[in-house]
Picture 1 (cartoon, rainbow, N blue to C red):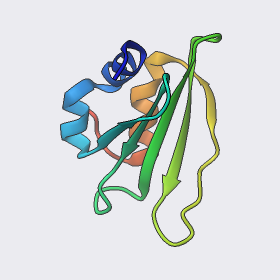
Picture 2: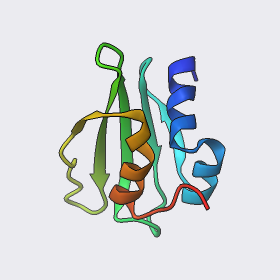
Picture 3: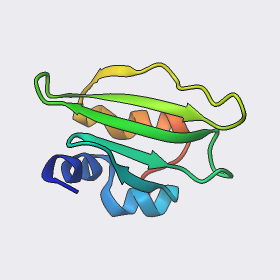
Picture 4: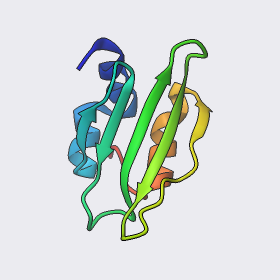
Length: 97
């Protein structure tokens, strides 16, 4: 995991967030993280977060459970301080106590 990806993970709550949500984190490219969530905890199966260095913002996408697993609309221009509340709102999972 590179520095940009580590920073993204820390902005979402770091290791505590992974423990609280049961998420597994995967890297894809230099500025993208994929969080795979347990089936029984959320209706969302995965969340991808991509950093846009030119705008200093993030793009967040979700993938739902089920046979018709549809990719949710990409939420663009998300600032770092909104990442954690947005993740919690999309997944219904808390990232910290």
